[in-house]
Length: 279
Image (tube, rainbow, N blue to C red; front, side, top):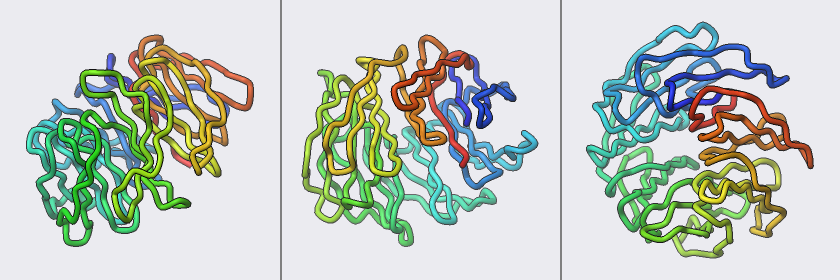
């Protein structure tokens, strides 16, 4: 597990026993990362004009994807990387070796993305719709209405839905929307105040982190609330690691691990913004 630290551009790596085993310091202002494969990680930041691919085992730079500034998110598909860019309002497909393959114009400020079944779902942060992209043709095949400032998405394959969070536009958002993947219609609204901006799923549950209230919300995959826990100082990310829930406080520079009723805290780099898990 690693935290991507924004206030001091770095990554802090933890082993299975949650001991900090390495720190990578960067000259570039990276703010996000995603695993490409088990030994390759992509690092990006909105002010960095490329996406850098590093070997996890050695820390060596493998290649750079020339993207221009404005990269907000990178996710891996089956055999491609998808790069969202808020300056160009595009999503681009790259090969794992760094070749740019295709582009598609989406809404204003593409941010969160999810991939499943050869389909790419893109939340346009400053538009009132999400873009549904067919990955093979890279055509936008649908636009589904969602609130502006939506952020955070997971694909719940068991119920064939998308779970979507967000900051809220002018007022604080308190809801996670559950959207039918076939029709784009809203099936449920789940209460998760305030500003549920990150989601993760594991086995039979989905966890939501609300950074406006420093709160972790847990739901069953059919949308029933399990419990709520106040945790961290301004958390932005949530994940599962060895069956435990992990989150990180951006303001208190602390990694929190929730295992049953036990909560453990660990020091990490300054401004942990994202979590990366390698299973």
